[in-house]
Length: 164
Image 1 (cartoon, rainbow, N blue to C red):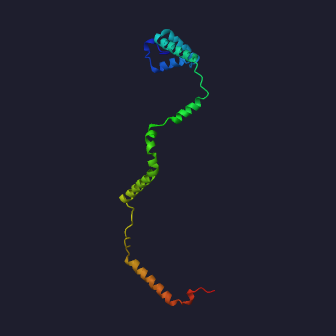
Image 2 (image 1 turned 180 degrees about the horizontal axis):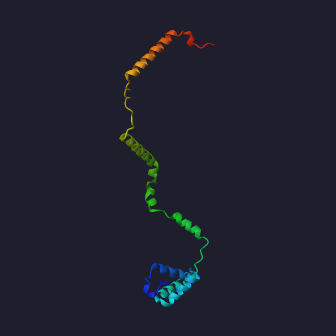
Image 3 (image 1 turned 60 degrees about the horizontal axis):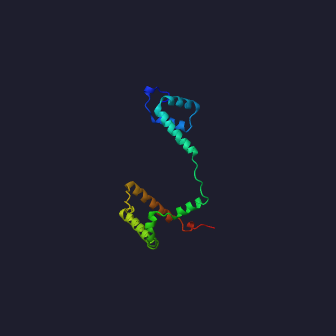
């Protein structure tokens, strides 16, 4: 549209954005000149730009009503008064939840945990398998026990007591 010959334009959303920026006075001088040149030749764009210009002029002239000094106070009071539908429904049941709700919830949690534990019991180790001992290991152990027995017989009973 802008900078494109008339026979090749396709009226994209980007062109509308450029026209909106033109009407809002957000374009630089070069872009403004290019858009104004295009508006001389294109009636549809000129109509849109004129409509946008009228909107911006109306907004520039509009003066909002002054806010009353107690606006914030009244707003916060109104917010505090508003109650959600869930609170309205649950309000009659609150005393029941306070008196009976906690024990019920605790019981439900206890049952849930017990169910989990009963469903999948802890791994309990089975009896230890007997270690396999080779003949060489047994013979070596017996020889060492015999040597300790001989040592105990030869060693005097006094030498076991430390001397001071």
